[in-house]
Amino acid sequence: MSKTILITGASRGFGKIWAEAFLKRGDNVVATARNTSKLDDLVSKYGAAIHPLQLDVTNKAQCVDVVSKAQQHFGKLDVVINNAGYGLFGAVEEAGEQEVREQFETNVFGTLWMLQAVLPILRAQGFGHIIQVSSVLGITTVPLLGLYNASKWAVEGMTESMAGEIKGFGINTTLIEPIGYSTDFSGDSGVQSKGIDAYNDFKAVAYEQMKKMPYGDPKATAEVVLKIADAENPPLRIFFGTTALPWAKQVYAERIAQWEKVNHLSEAANG
Image (cartoon, rainbow, N blue to C red; front, top):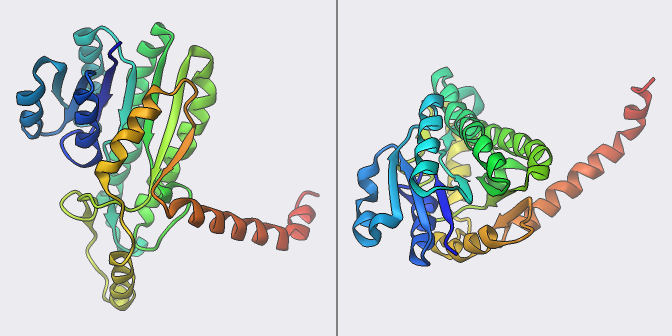
């Protein structure tokens, strides 16, 4: 039986690749984007199976309206993929107030508005699967992406709490945590803060290191997303990419070692 999938940020990158993967196997897809003309090729190819809807996830009322239209159009929502988001590049000190607010409006509040829009429908159905596109930077960090890191840490915390709240309604939750991929994340879709000269030398080295990282193939994620969407008991968290798990193991080992080193102070602070 075909599924109905709602994907935000479906005009490019992961969102568009995944939308086509679902369409190719016969599912119905509600594909949302700020500019739906970028979905014209999928409409031409898959016809009525794709229902494009214009959406700015930072607009809460529009999120509610789009979700309602999606449910009415196909009659149900099996999987909701919160994919819309982007990166803000620069040192924490460099980030402008408006840039930071916009980063959180999209990556955190946009995700929240979509969750609050879809959950009443999924609860009424008694089934559904919410897939959140987070990042390995939602559990660790790199310099020069501090505000993006912070937004994904927020998504992680919110989603883990929500997963426990909604499991009893028959709704599954999965956080996808990709490592670096060859998308336009650091290109057209990214935002660069106005620089402060004091960070120029550090940034030159850091960005050069980023360029040398092994990046994954976005197209390779499609089959895995299909398997996650079909899983009877999907994972709460899954890394995408070969280097994420070794990195996470190192980071958590270092954290535990640090906590243990100062645990005598922690116990003294208990009173």
